[in-house]
Amino acid sequence: MNRIDLKFKNLKKDGRKAFIAFITAGYPDLETTYHLVLELEKNGVDIVELGVPFSDPLADGPVIQEASVYALKRGVNLPKILELVKRLRRKTEIPICLMTYYNPVFCFGEKVFVDKAVDAGVDGVIIPDLSYEEAGNLRSCTRHKDLANICFIAPTSSPERMRKVLNSARGFVYYVSLTGVTGSRKRLPADLKSKLTEVRRVSPCPVCVGFGISSASQVEAVGKFSDGVIVGSAIVARIRENIGRSGLVKNVGAFTGRLNAKKI
Image 1 (cartoon, rainbow, N blue to C red):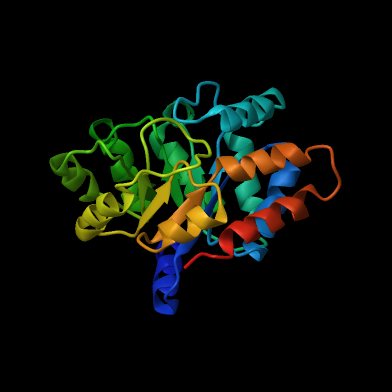
Image 2: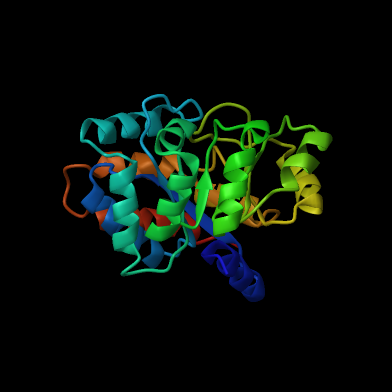
């Protein structure tokens, strides 16, 4: 069983929701990312998303864009990230997803990418700029290798499109809480609960909410009516604040633990 599926199975059995943390791989360096993943797990993170740095991250806000540029300037790339995952697998079984744009996958070749990702120990892949209509070949490759090709549902998704996309969902469904890019928000949409109820009613997979969640109170609120919450920009911003300081890994881990403390 894929580690993501097993994680959600165990969470459901325990009556708990998933806390998913995004960090940019190689920010500020790959060695720090290695230790961050292990520290996040210690602080209650259930699934880690490793962001693959890309030069044109169109779905991301300024915090993650800056982190991507920083990592790219230091030579971080997909092969190095796969080696990092392989190294992590000697220490942890925490589910790991790669959040990448399509260009690095295309340059690798879809089948080669899937084979190497699975061999390294990756459990899922999230590609925000690859539409459902253009992802047929990749879906086929991932299905044969039990790599979760995680799909997006947006507030603007029509019921027809939602049902079509959900039909091929694997791992978990990434529900984008708002239109726009990633980044912290003071308020989440008023209709988020009703939208999620609609998606969860027809989804074959757990539905997790990302984009805009940045505080413990938001984690608690969203956790009441979703299967999990995804936090990225707030964690990456805390990494940025600690670059050059001793205790970066511990400080970021503790911050994430506080976000996670009120998770349902």
